[in-house]
Amino acid sequence: MSLATSFIQARRIIEVQLQQLWSSPNSAQQIAPIMLWGAPGIGKSQLVRELCLLLDIDFIDVRLSQLEPVDLRGIPVPDGDKVKWLVASSWPNDPASRGILLFDELSAADRSLQVAAYELLLDRRLGDLYTLPDGWLVMGAGNRAEDRAVSVPMSSALANRLMHLEIKADIEAWGDYAVSKGLHADVVAFLRFKPEYLLVNDTNLQRGWPSPRSWERVAYLLKADIKLDDISQRLMIAGLVGESACTEFIAFRQMNHQRFDIQAMLRGEIAVAIPERIDQQLTFCSSVANYLWKDDVNLQEQRLSVFFDISSQLSCDLATLMLMDVLRVSDNTSADNRAERVFAHPDFENWLKHHGVPMEHITSEANLGLPEGRFATASARHASLKPANESGKQS
Image (cartoon, rainbow, N blue to C red; front, top):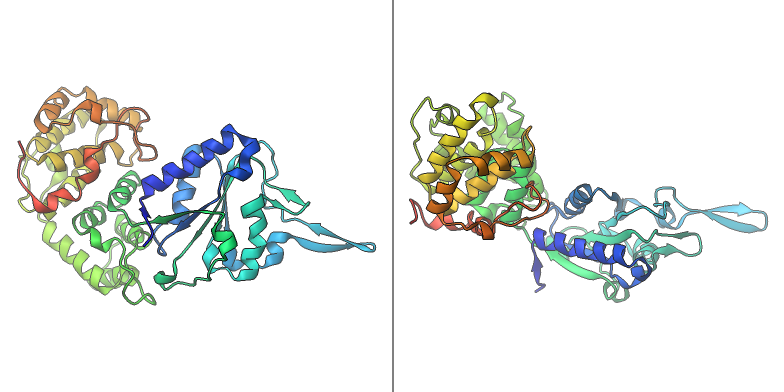
């Protein structure tokens, strides 16, 4: 069994490879290309794409299963009694450019395509026709044989020259990502409560099944707030994640959508009331984070005061998780602005005393939607797993 890699760890490893590449361009061929393995829909290519956006570097996604060998090697053109090769214009040509070249679906490509990709993967060149600029990292991604997706055995010669990382479904990393992207709070809360539904690929893979990709599409469906009857909505969700996951998710929503008017609560129009069950508390906390920065900016201090009042009545784990969601959530304000408002609030010191999270444990974590150098949290990473076995206030 391969050693599994979380998304956060995989991102760090890719960044290390990039730093090595950029600090010593002449040793580019000594830096092993990375091969990401994982189930379909887990977000392998999205991980690389998001990292390139964060680092402001170029990204080229080559879907090998959709190509012919000539698309990689170039097109032969007669030139008198000789033949010239025209290389595809899609390859990067600027010597000063930086980026990641990803050979996606590498494990689904037949042997002729894998062989055609060898030169760029291993030698960073196509014969004498083309050389990849030094600032580019080459990567591959593909599904494993046990994923019941198209998978062609990789030659030992190629496999031995790659750095292999097997990506696992990670609810903590996905929850951070989902909040930072503003995905629907119900989906985030459900998967934090039942993380076993994040990825289930042992069902009928010819129909919809739960994966990070399909849950993100459910979240967008709900976020669109399209007026659908219950049957149509159920059919659409089941079509994305399958019947079993759909049934559990809808039951979760129905049980947890008691009439807590969170927006009125944040405005101070009704008293703070905390749900009793842990699944309801997860939904409640996700909704508070979702609504906190919305509405009239002149009432922001009022809403923050209520937020800290709510936090004082939660367990330490839930309060920490909600704080991180509030700082990470996607809205029209900047991450720095949100951090300044929270940390400058007079109730924040009491929050620290009550929940016992020392500031030295609050550190920066790249690509989580948080201000660089300010905070992330070590303890909050485990908050989504602990509350399922405990409730009430912690001392």
